[in-house]
Length: 129
Image 1 (cartoon, rainbow, N blue to C red):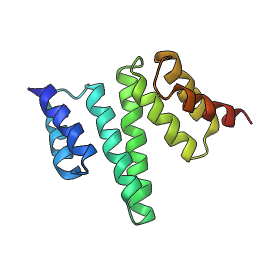
Image 2 (spheres, rainbow, N blue to C red):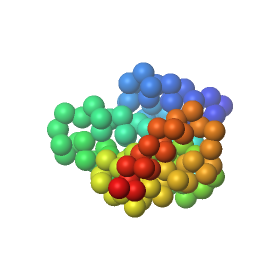
Image 3 (tube, rainbow, N blue to C red):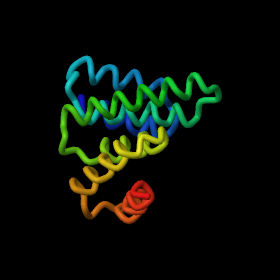
């Protein structure tokens, strides 16, 4: 059941139903606090909230929470490619080029045939400049 609730939360995140998704993810993490996928989804939740925030303070807070969630997901499962990808984008946005590059490289190492591999490689070229 936990997996179903977690995946429903992901669909709610994608649909912009953030409050519902947060309640569902809270339920999942209350049962399994070391679920790397739930932490990744929490990162997605906060990342999208940051993108849609109207004021800079909220935007910064959600970006910080997204970063923390993705980092927690990586700590729990270093072989999961998605949180590395998202960390790369967040670090890139923060102009932390060294960390962005490392995250993107790790993502490509874990998922060399990723559908967005070409795009990520373009980011890496830009980061090398």
